[in-house]
Length: 114
Image (cartoon, helix red, strand yellow):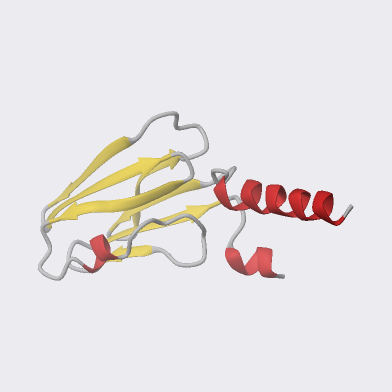
């Protein structure tokens, strides 16, 4: 009986942590103006998005349930080092290019923690 409960707990944990974030939409802003929306829940394959502004270029990589800055020609690369954005807890920001990427919909870690 204990083995069954343990197995069900492990299966539920894997389901919660490995599934794509349902309902997440990535919103990409340049200078505070919406540049593009990407429904991450509907992606079936990785998608590269080039955000080209007068200040420089950011190349984003969107996958089901997550998005990141793959490369940028800004001097500090903080946006690249931010890694994957998978919840709405904090956005990715490229200050030199004035690009902000945030997730809407789905749940944030704060909401799940209760």
